[in-house]
Image 1 (tube, rainbow over the protein chains, first blue to last red):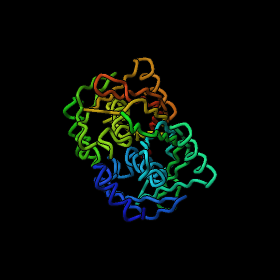
Image 2 (cartoon, rainbow over the protein chains, first blue to last red):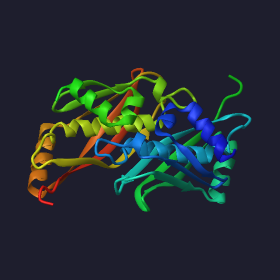
Image 3 (cartoon, each protein chain N blue to C red):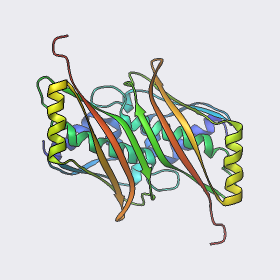
Image 4 (tube, each protein chain N blue to C red):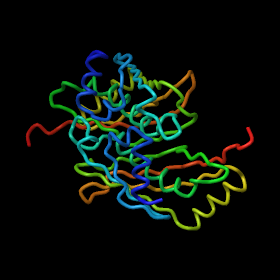
Amino acid sequence: MTAEQLQQFLLAEIPLARCMALEVESLSASAIRLAAPLEPNRNDKGTGFGGSIASLMTLAGWSLLHQHLEPGQPPAALMIHKSELNYQAPVTGRMTVETTIDQASLQHFLATLQQRRKARVELEIDCHSDQRLCARMHGRFVALLQDTNP
Amino acid sequence: MTAEQLQQFLLAEIPLARCMALEVESLSASAIRLAAPLEPNRNDKGTGFGGSIASLMTLAGWSLLHQHLEPGQPPAALMIHKSELNYQAPVTGRMTVETTIDQASLQHFLATLQQRRKARVELEIDCHSDQRLCARMHGRFVALLQDTNP
């Protein structure tokens, strides 16, 4: 999946991503960078709304993993299970959100999913704006193999 | 501030709240209930998007406290500082988000803000859909008295 394909998918399938004017700046097997402009994501003070920051971070982690599951047989469902989010500084302009996964963690996640039909993985996700770290999320994502013989 | 006034404020000042079609169902000094329909807040699977849930929870906690600070002299800034969010079940319909604060915690928060120019308070915020608890957030909010003699 290319960055452009992922962006089209997110904008088509998740209405809030359209509202946020989400952009996929880059995507590889082990790293992703999403971005969004300030204006549709501002709060009453004119800085970044916490909910927009959380949304962009959630989509970054989910998308980084999703590319490795889709299309799969049997298909897998992927969801965020838990997050811890620290807001450290106000978002004062365009926000970028990044996360990475190392090859060993990814392979362990995918192998566990096949063996146990369920697997989880934890990601650190950072949000920057104006060259400043504004927020950091620790997110736990869970994948489930779908039942193909209902 | 009435529920209707709060809804107008949130829809006017926070673009994402408009996209989410946020509604303020009820507001008192010690409790708040927000709601949002599923359609603008769905994910690719047709259930509630985690970012929408986080956004609605953040706005519930912020709004419950904000009514006690505005209008204040000197004015106070209120922001979410940290959140821990557990997603427990998929949101399958209209979502409602609720939180409360007891009188003692509220008075301590407001008194500390006046004495130290900074105060924090922690809230438990629940999200329900179809009579089921779908997510629970533990949120820490911080208020700062603004400098009126810059």
